[in-house]
Length: 239
Ligand code: NDP
Image 1 (cartoon, rainbow, N blue to C red):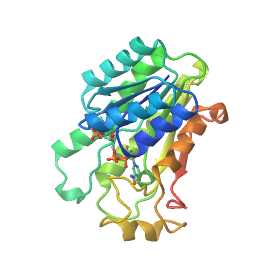
Image 2 (image 1 turned 180 degrees about the vertical axis):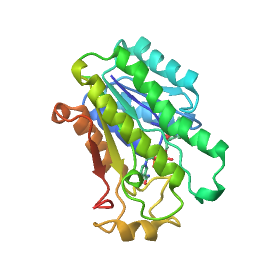
Image 3 (image 1 turned 120 degrees about the horizontal axis):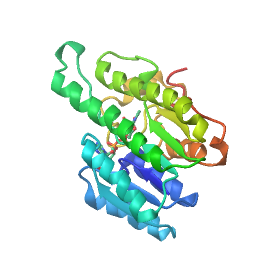
């Protein structure tokens, strides 16, 4: 069974569907989009797997713990955790408030930290934890990303240290770093589209399914000997 945070839309929804086609039952969390989360669950069930949507703000520690525990209680096991839910921030370093800092770090770092902590207690050998980082953690292409990039770099640090700490238990931990991916967060035809494209070696946005394919690789047989790694799915953004 796989738990995908932020599975109602975008990359998380694509990951949930992709893991389903690989044979997994999937629990997904969402913050606001109950209808879209239920649509993804309907797709999971149409593929012959079990699915469940749970409302859980990743910035709310109690809700995160409850979501992981509910997933385990309902499905009896937990094999894969995908920490995908993430908040975005763009703005000058000088004007970033402490409230913005605390909120972003709560969603992008504390939530994944706590989810991994609780999930790992329920995982046996072969467990997989996959964090969705960002190419912004690896390359500061434009100013204005100090807070967002800091949060995603922290997630990368978490993956590397957990890869080492959980390795003896047979649990792998990795980060997938997407480049510009066409979602509601970062639409290819949005205001940042042309700026982003000029940094991408392939010259175009990626699709959510491109990230989902790498997540599925890490979650499956191909990921057995990969841990503590950061994998870019960015069309060459960080090249
Ligand atoms: P979207 O905004 O398209 O979708 C975000 C998903 O996460 C939704 O399902 C949303 O739920 C959920 N979510 C957001 N905040 C929370 C929260 N506090 N608690 C629970 N769920 C939440 O984003 P993307 O699919 O584009 O991004 C997914 C991940 O990939 C993020 O971590 C992002 O930082 C990262 N990323 C994206 C890139 C891109 O270009 N798109 C590039 C690099 C990294 P709801 O529908 O209820 O709001």
